[in-house]
Length: 114
Length: 111
Image: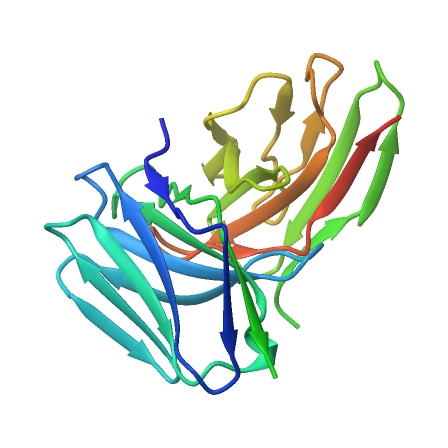
């Protein structure tokens, strides 16, 4: 049972435009969400997180939006740069339990064209 | 320089052999984790440890074993009982219940 889903395996955007990566979850107990960026043959790098008490969190070019009623979150990257090309994973946890045990989506490959 | 190290980066194993993957962190984090990544899939949790001398099974623990004798170290043994061990293995650590930080990974290939 896939509790966290990223339904788009890949996304291609032009440099300077907005990239929107989506993530859906089914477990209503999840209340903390993270986005990670991963290059091939490397470990994931933490990008940004959001707790369920918020509906938006910004960090530079990255913004995460959370819609609890729809059990949906999205990552916006504006403006997109070629160096953003990587695999993006969303992850979810029940904050404060199981010491931060994360459930990951399958990942979305983002390609930013110059 | 603080961080998480995993060694080796590439590991080859013959069928039927046990192999141990190393994970060390100098971030003073209490919790450590092992994940497995297969092509086209997300990360799946193998084992995690909240504190020294304690660890719990994750979602896919069968065929794996761990130990946590020191705060800094969380080695993973892939045993011969693991039916499909070829994968990319990632170790992570966290100071609290939220953000996990990952090492560079070990690519294990069974010949």
